[in-house]
Length: 230
Image 1 (tube, rainbow, N blue to C red):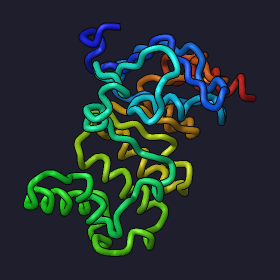
Image 2 (image 1 turned 30 degrees about the horizontal axis):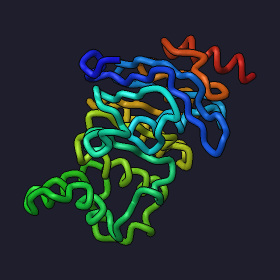
Image 3 (image 1 turned 135 degrees about the horizontal axis):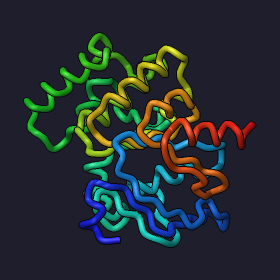
Image 4 (image 1 turned 90 degrees about the horizontal axis):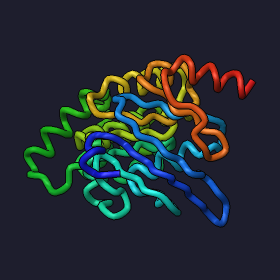
C-alpha cells in the first residue's frame, strides 16, 4: 500500500495480531474511506483490537496498517494528534480532578487565553458548564462519558475511534452520545453492540473469530449478523 493512495483512508493489509500466543486478528485486509464506519460482532471477535490498531494502542504482529497515510506504530505521535480515541469506560480516560481541568489538559501546549475560551465553549456545548469545577468522580455515568468524548472532540481530530462508548449508559444517554458522534464532520470508526446505532452509519464491518466476514451497506451486514448470531 502506498501512503499517497491511502491519504484520508484507513487501510489494513494482511494484518494479524497475536496476544499471549493467541490469534486475536487473522489476515485482515481492508480499505475504508466512508465517513461513518460501524464495527460489529460478538464479544471476542476482534472488534476492539481492530480499533486499537488505528492509533497504535495495539501493534500488528504481521501486516501493514495505514491511517490517513500514516503508520500508527512508526508515526505514533503524529497519528495521535489526528486520531481521537474514546473508551467504553470514561473512568479510564478522565485524568484530571475536574471537567474544566480535564478539557484543558487536552489542549496543553496552546496559549492560555485560547485554552480558557475553548474549554468554556466545550463545557457549554456538551451540557457540562454547571459542573466545570465539580469533582469529576461526582458526575453521572452519562456526564462522564460526555466529558470523555468532549476531551477528544476539543482537539478537532480528523478521525474519532469510539470503542463501545454507549455500553455503560442508559437509553437516554446512549442516544445523546450516539447522536453526537454521528454528527461530527470527522471520520468515525464506531465499535458497537447497538445495531440501531450501527444502522445509521455509512458502512458496517462484521468481525467473527478475528476475521472480517462482512463489509458493506449497513442493513445487509446487520441482517447477516442477526442471522448468524441467532
